[in-house]
Length: 333
Image (tube, rainbow, N blue to C red; front, side, top):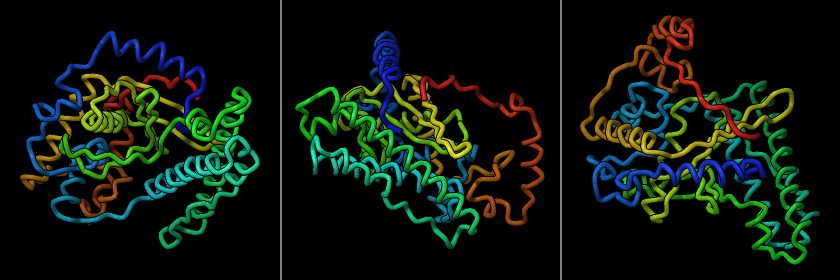
């Protein structure tokens, strides 16, 4: 999921990075400028990147309910599936590197164990039997897909470098680091952030999504980029949203590469300040005009179920009237 094809490498190296150098980010919007506005937070209410970037509730009332009212909502099916998929991919990457370090250049046979890596256990108490079986099938498909990709990457490096050591083999074949823990304290975020993956060779932030595309997804990579810059004082100019879906027993992958430019940074900081204000001043932003059916706080905001008619009306509108935003086609798969 998190390593690039040769074509994607060229696109990042010869396309996006030179473009970033031609249109440099304003220094006041770099994470290392955290002691000064606009990076310096106005409120002492640290939030996670997902709370700021996840604009699934248009007014941010989900953050108010969670942080101010202390109301916990059970994750929906999509969130539970996504959590298990992320866990599976991270486990495959980590186990592959462990086997490489244990066996070095003779790791090829040992890597076959990736196909038998135990699957994360779904929460059977919250899933119907048919949902659980469907999820297990998807995880098996994802495990086989990712295991094959990892082994192919290792074999390609071994075929090219006769005397490669274990550390170099792991770095060349699997250059991404998964579940990277970061502190966002300098920019007013949680001290316990976790980026899906970072390719430090390109300073490329990657985030995997298993649901529909949303225009605000790029705020996720932007938040992590700002946190990295605040910690290491190294520019992070490129992000990638990895969209994964399943079709006919296959895994389909689209990667949306993008510059983490001034506009995205300003949008993230404005969203951060707005939501931190909601929490610090305990402001209820109220209900949006329509609420998505997948919102985990639907029953809290609409205890009598009157939301159904409003949502149905919204779904009947053409995409353009709902303010849909087109997203550039991904490069490579």
